[in-house]
Picture 1 (cartoon, helix red, strand yellow):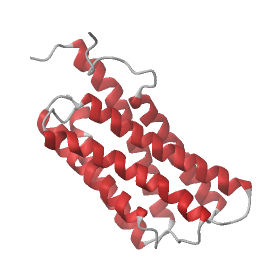
Picture 2 (cartoon, helix red, strand yellow; picture 1 turned 180 degrees about the vertical axis):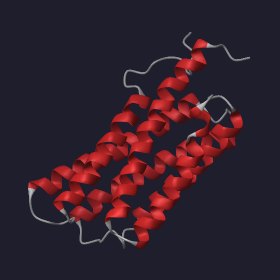
Picture 3 (cartoon, helix red, strand yellow; picture 1 turned 45 degrees about the vertical axis):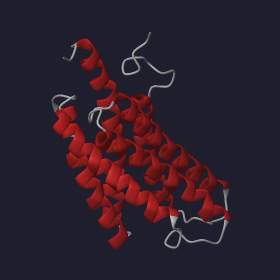
Picture 4 (cartoon, one colour; picture 1 turned 120 degrees about the vertical axis):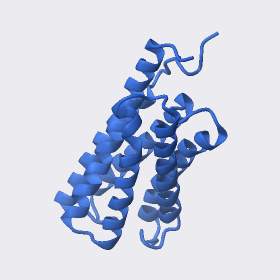
Length: 197
């Protein structure tokens, strides 16, 4: 029988996370350079929004991979945080077409704060549990919590201002998801290479 913690899925969630972070960062840059606004006419906005949704869903796949691999431990509290993270990204991804297809503004869309809160709580909880569980070693163990705290800062800055510093921080946060994906890819390898227990 195959161990579910070491079996490789057809689509590796860690690599999906790496790609999703890079794609999200690229789309933020494209959006800022093109000065796109949701609802603007043109295929370029539809393409950009579609790619943003794909990146968000890629973050959700990464979160499912984190749930499956359990770097934060096997306890019920540790297992819930990746699910919060996945649910947050799915809600945020669902908000994009709702805004594009209706007259609901981003500020009035209830999916955005619900998704953002779930995503932030999931990332913070994941960071704490990964640090305390010690299943990942080295930089992998220490990265998730400071990354989670930094994303909270990004959200605060993005809410307060829509200036370029917010975009730079948003790109950095997106790239942080690529690093988290890489931690999942390499953490799994180091965990299977050295038997635990």
